[in-house]
Image (cartoon, rainbow, N blue to C red; front, side, top):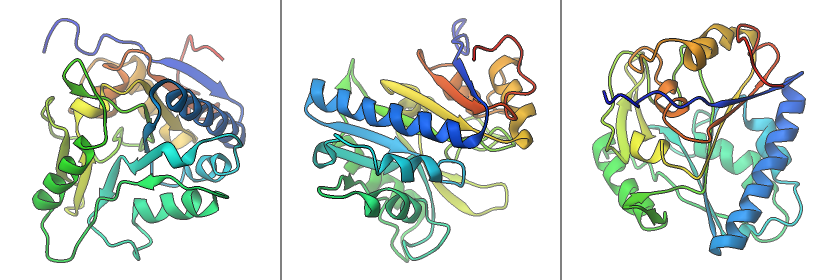
Length: 251
């Protein structure tokens, strides 16, 4: 580990409840999409699955003045299930956001889970599609926007505790602790986005959030540290319950 690894300090924004967090997130993400389209002519955004971000995505669909036709969206990770499965992150992304947008809709960069294909094959195919749409900055693929959730165990995307992940990985085939296969953006992409945000709510995540932000740097134990502590300009948006074990935070 280099001397500077894990040395970045994310900015903390605390909101009184999950609803106000979701409203802030939707407004901010909408403005960041507008900014990217204005400056680059398009926007590539990785958005989270899971229960916490759902309200944010539903509110984002109602934001006005977003040029969705020039926007590419993708799930930052995916389960090895088809679109018809309720556990599919892409299914949630489509139902909460894409299907609710009036007018032109964004291009969804699908993980394209196909029966009979193994996780390594799917991850390689997705990586090729991803690198075809994401701009390169200083030789590295750079998302315009990365929004992530965090689990109570400190995992994010599908990077789980208990193992180290290669820093140069663009896309990874990973495994949940329950043994089921997952697919995830890798550290090279997750640590290099123009704008990075975590959405975290609930008291159940308070201890983990404190470790991720203030604890000793141990990304094997706390995978969310890989992004939160190595992404300059990373912001963590959390409600007061999730922030209850943090100190010296900015409201």
